[in-house]
Image (tube, rainbow, N blue to C red; front, side):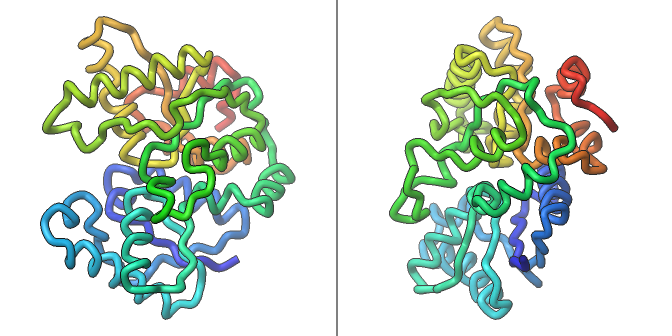
Length: 273
């Protein structure tokens, strides 16, 4: 299937592991990503607080380019996805826009994942954390199960992962406060760590590069702040698909994490590259 790919700014900088694993996984599933030519920043982080017209026109410019290509549009970054969906309502675009996890979570791709599984991840217990931008507000995102999304759960279960139930899938991690109010962010993320461990999870699976950074990058600082000893690997769901399908490059992606997941995977005998 041919789809238009809008990576967003983060995936070409701090979240290259997400971009590279996304491209590798899609190629292995016969999803042909065509990066949107001349795409621009969607303004997700600040445009909406500075200029309402700009906040619509930046993503609308990308929608216009994608419409000319004629394919569905797939977006890995939930912040970009949210802004593109908001702009779509304003400019009345008929383009079909998918959050990446929702796209790969469709039955067609789940079946293909199962049929190509080389190394089942059934030794892993995990919780799936969606964050607050991919599904809410539902009147913008179109999400039906916005309080209990299951696309990543379904993907991970197709990989063999023991997905643990918990009630914090869509709680905010406070990523936007990571500079200005770390005290707020620390408390929000600590709650996620504690609830994940309470659910007996050994790792957290995410689909948002901001959530991944927040939960991974600050884990050492949060441990010191609360005098705890958190050591919880935080994986992109695409990285786990790559591991389970035996794709080249998986180790490279994982080496960019701050909480080193390699010892955890070695202990589980899941690192085969």
